Image (tube, rainbow, N blue to C red; front, side, top):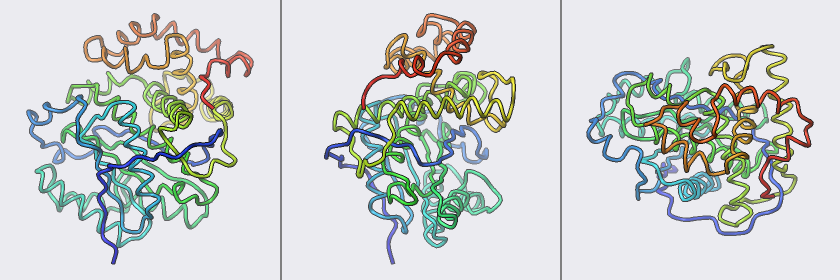
Length: 367
């Protein structure tokens, strides 16, 4: 019987990359800070404060269900290592990946809950009850079911997210089967690498918020378009820069879409989502769970790209997040972009009406 594998991630991919990139994997990417039970948030605050928000030496820890291939294990682990090298190694970080097999998922859940119990973070029985509940979201069983459903339907789809946890002092990620690393159903390793970068940028975002209070963290995070659009834009552009430099590699680049093609689709899909699902809703009013949520990802990526085109591609990391705790979200926004968010929304609405060629011209060139 296969054993559960823990990868500490000590190797990097080093071969060359191709010229084009696709983003075919259909994924739901979420950040769910503060959604878990009170019993989970029992970590010692002094211990948490020692490393939170700091760049650390210990690499991300990745945990995989036994039914997952070496391509999945190596793909997730090595991509995380490149992301931490590029944006800073904010940790401790745990990344748990489910497959589709029930027994393997049960074993991985047992390992997770035993770890939480050993660290004094969660009663093992409560942890097991939560993560095996077939009627719950964002638990191990729900992520296993997503992968199993994708296999049954023979259609690339998945879900992964940052599931906390400031109270434990770690960045916790859980993922369904990232089947692109196995190149199933026309999905690609490149798409999965982008998704890992998207998720890791959420760790970067949360690492720069010191407060343990849920409401304060939510206020400092900003609107959904900024959270998800920032992670998506930074992931899409950074993987292409790293592919071009050879610091990040992928296998089989045939048929991959360019950055311009990806963002053309985002513009079309974002506008269509608002028109069809919630006519008249403004970008800054979109919240998690409403009918326009996906537009926050698509048009949010455009919004962040519009802003960074004005001030430089590294402004989020160089200026915005280092000033976030002191100035608050609006203050950091104004310091970084030289305008209020209100003025930005007015500008961006005009940008959305421009010809597509003018819109695409703001994107950086890495392909």
